[in-house]
Length: 404
Image 1 (cartoon, rainbow, N blue to C red):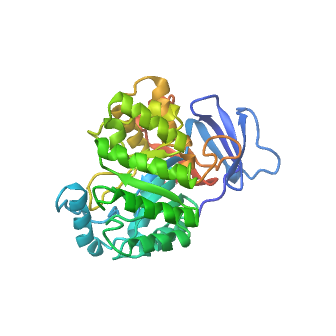
Image 2: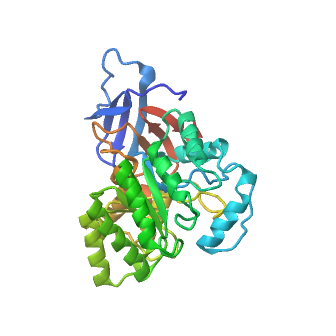
Image 3: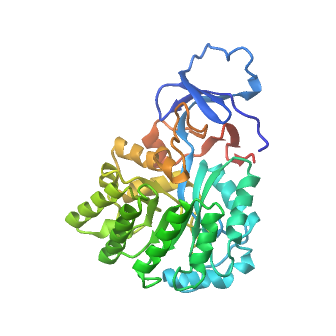
């Protein structure tokens, strides 16, 4: 990383509160103290490492809890949408055309990660395709791209079987290899509608997770009772294997589609099993019961899904703009609800990237985003330009320019 470390981030308003100075050492916030306009930095503090926040609103670095940074063609010439719709149609189209776009590749992965940093994302949980065509090469690509940014973004990897698990003999072995080689999580995909064997797929995934102590993160598009049934299978296996807190349901459209009583029972059971959820706030989907999930102890993360890839030309990597979409989809209007949306996209998502804290507090990583906004609801509704992005105690973007 080419920028110098920040030791004091002066005159910022954490979460829209009182003007404060954030003291930083070794990439970690060490203290949050009231700002004294007449005060001077402590003796021995290098003025070059003191950054003036000019009273701007401060949020924690944004956390993209569900990304696919290995798939994007961001930065390349426009690629027209093609192929058939639906999960299987998109898988087939991607398999047919990814090589010609250099996917997975370090250059394209770097491009989308830098755009994410520019808009304030400092931590990512990214699904990386693992299949019979690319093997584990995509994981190596993503790790190389993340390393090239020198700490501007922290990433955890999900080894993701986009083309299915059991229906492609050898994929379970690849997932086992990925877990043994350090992938933090292994993924699954619609155990019922893709593999047509929900018990078999989940048994295979949980066996790997038990063996290597990794997490499980399953893409579940199946809706209604079929989707709910698969979540029930995950709850059962989570409790039997002692993997509470290590299992995530991505998308989980079924949760938003169930009748009230069934939904309440399922959400309660998920909470008891320590199962989490991630959403990409898709337009037109039944909104997840965010308040009920949080009340039951089901942590919820927000992610971009794919960003301008062979699945869809949409997506910019701007998680704050996606927070606006999450709030609108959820019918949020009250200040407290809008602030909840911001926390889902930042501080509440610590666990999705392996952190115990991700907030503007002492002991948390010094990941900070400054925006010109009156308060947090204003920031959520407008998603204003990111004036400054600090990651691991270094300025990595300023006024829309990425510095790494």
